[in-house]
Image 1 (cartoon, rainbow, N blue to C red):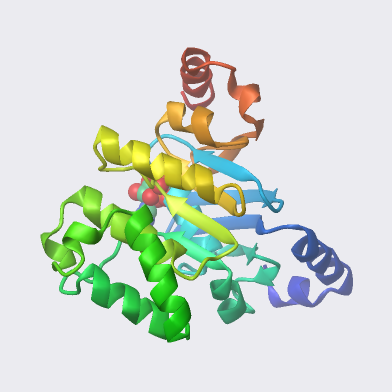
Image 2: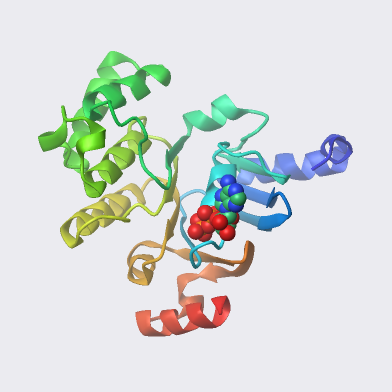
Length: 256
Ligand code: ADP
């Protein structure tokens, strides 16, 4: 989006209208790495309360899109909003309503879950009383009790992923963007994180990326399927198919 387009009153009006009705918006998001186009003109809008699966084969552009949506990566073109706030023009407000689980989980390997969560709470300006009650909740929901004071760098992938989930939901945000939340988890842990997401889905707007089609069936209202950096399907889960086998077949057809 160049400066002329941004200042155009009609486009600004349209964007403002979009912000007021959408909890997550991608508008023409595009990312070039040199000559390589990782994401090309991705647009969608997620209303309050919807749980959306962001699907696609490896390298389709899911993480890149999520990084742009969350303000961690500047797009080559396009706009993004979270909770009614333009992510690039109003980053601090957008960050207040956003919980983000990045693709590789928490990166502060020398910190413990305890020190990381208290550090995140301080950065977010949360009160001590609120933080205490939220920490009690996230430690229970993400089962972090046994690793609470161990360095994150020494934890298994499954525990790191759950520390990442705890960090994402700590401030009780209205919007969650979760990049492969069940990646690296064993079947029991996967079950637990799915249960957590299902319970969060009652009160939050969620965009989650996954490779696991059964997860989509179990948790999501809608699918946005990307391939080669473009949206190839956006609709209710039933549009891909009603059962997992049909879903797999359709996924292959659309991403072949
Ligand atoms: P997905 O999350 O769907 O697996 P990604 O968004 O991680 O896909 O990557 C999309 C494409 O962009 C891939 O081909 C990937 O190799 C490429 N890519 C991602 N990050 C970079 C980068 N920093 N520099 C160059 N290419 C990148």
